Image 1 (cartoon, one colour):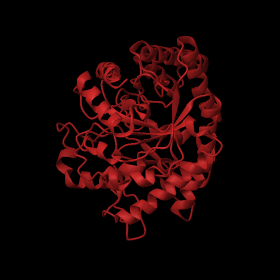
Image 2 (cartoon, rainbow, N blue to C red):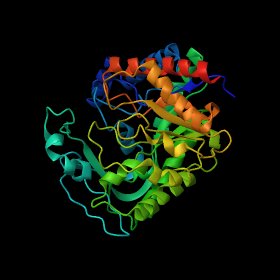
Image 3 (cartoon, helix red, strand yellow):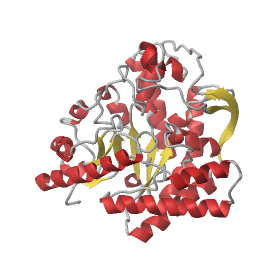
Image 4 (cartoon, rainbow, N blue to C red):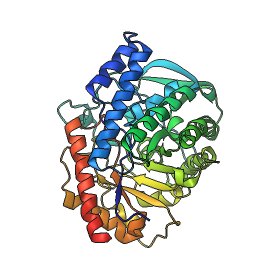
Length: 400
């Protein structure tokens, strides 16, 4: 058992200027593959060393293999899968400009377009105001659609992710590390022209992505399944569904997660759930208490979740009087991606202690609400991680 509160984060970390430049050159064919991967390995080495130097216990490769071309990028956690799944056809449809209004009916949940989400509907003027701080106008992002059977074609890429991280952790002496991968339900959030049912799409994504999860686990790392769809998809269903219908929709996704993780040791997996990374009002977020029982049906070794944002900071209460399986870990977000203010270490410690009081300190690993890369300025992101470590030290001194 650990003798202190360990620390980690959700995955995405700020990309270095050198890596962003190399990503853009590679897209233009202006750099050789050998030169590119030399820069990529150097960048991963740098980001792992920085985590180790800060005192982060469970590190990763910053998701540097999930390609971004700019400092602000909300979609790399999802977009990376477009080159790793077969059965997709790219379209010229801009994800952010799509105004399609898809309407769900009782017993038939369908996701509407991003611009038609209920929070955006309620705060339309704010979302479209470039001076509001939540402006969603940004560079066009093309969306693929399902046009054939979904297969996994990313073996070389995931093996590269694992090799980059292995080289770095071996170099800097950190044995505990993870790699984030898209969950089946998140992968399934595309237009479909091939499958007959939602359940078929989700299961096909699970069958394909199981190859990615296995490759990560076989390399000796923990697999983090990024599944924001389990919470934030609620806002993308218009009109608001019944809770029963949504829970049934979630169960399909949790069953797919369990199917995809078969054969992987439970302790080598963790599930990340959040309500989305955009800096908006979030008034239509579903309460954690309405989904927690379904989420906990996932056969994973722990759950990472948003717990510091203004809409979800009070939800530590869902863990009151809840018995956790032996060795099951909670990764509460005690640092928020939702604000530029850097949390005081004492506040971080108080948040950690609150969770430790509910489930026991042996079950708590201090983390972030979501990925910090692509959402916050580099200086702020690293300052927040420093505060995370300092807060964990304060909490450890009081809990152990």
